[in-house]
Image (cartoon, rainbow over all chains, first blue to last red; front, side, top):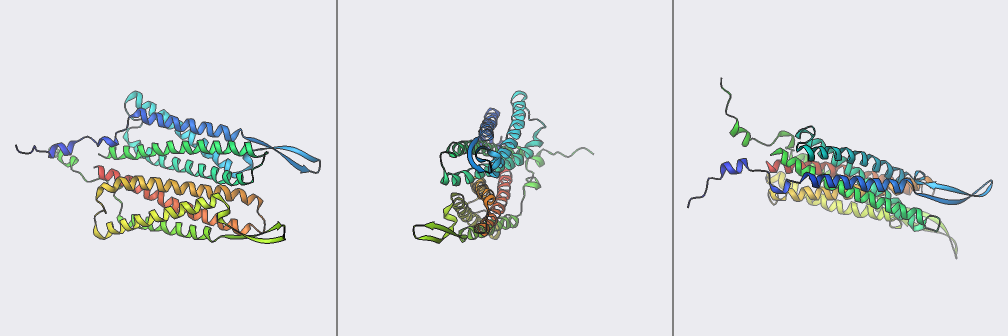
Amino acid sequence: MAPLPSTTNSLTMAPPPSTTISPIVILIVRVLTFISLLFSVIIIATNTATSTVATSFGLIDIKINFSAFYAYRYMVATGVIGMAYALLQTAFTIFYVTTGTRFGGDGLAFLDFYGDKVFSYLLATGAGAGFGLTVDLKQNDDSETNSFLNKAIAAASLLLIGFIFSAISSVFSSLSLSKKAV
Amino acid sequence: MAPLPSTTNSLTMAPPPSTTISPIVILIVRVLTFISLLFSVIIIATNTATSTVATSFGLIDIKINFSAFYAYRYMVATGVIGMAYALLQTAFTIFYVTTGTRFGGDGLAFLDFYGDKVFSYLLATGAGAGFGLTVDLKQNDDSETNSFLNKAIAAASLLLIGFIFSAISSVFSSLSLSKKAV
């Protein structure tokens, strides 16, 4: 038997299956990003420690919160910005899931691609900053700082998890770009 | 005049121009990544400070280097791993530039894509950790720590620059993926 003519087939073929990701999976990853960042921000923003300091009035207790540390302020900033982006993308993805078409058409695929890259890198630096400060502060850990630093580690871990989900979204939007290009 | 039959054309068309990046540009970005990381690692690994500490023998001067801080060890680790990867990719790109074909064929495009993503994220967390620790240590800066911390900021800045170049490589390899898919 002669081989079938395959030229037409190969020119009109569907995109490779590996680049087709269900919108539901995309939506779930966006929502998980948002939830991780939300808990990270809540934990770090409500984290307080009491420190006894010597003043002209004698020893007094002062409250210390995240804003005393630049790294924790940066964590909160990246977490909040990441949440806003994840929420926006969640809305777009819900639109996609319910209507079957992408908001703004396929032209926005490049915006997703670059947006996901920028915001996932931002979250990576935020998680890095959180761990970078906290792990070394833990070297001088005492009863006054122990709970504060443990919560900071928890918040940094959640930021790291949020970053990993956003990195997965970034892989999806890159692969989706190659699907659009076909 | 009747419109030309465009079906054949659109099916066999070349990839969009925006996804065609000159191999020379790709090579330059890889080399710049390597150089930035090399200088970052040299600066942080040779950075030392002298601190006067009270011991049972009285006051003595001790040398402190990067290994006293987890964040700086992590910076060195990410910098060295990033350098090894940038060097490997530089070799592949030189092969591409000189022979006109990709080492291992187009099948390695996916490896570039995922590799660039992973290593650029790694460098982002390394830069984040470096700044996260150093910026807050600068709050307690004194004459003994000033030079050490300034060099740490310089090393973290070079790591950040290396990360930005690696992120550009990652954009290239993602776009190249969509070119391969056509």
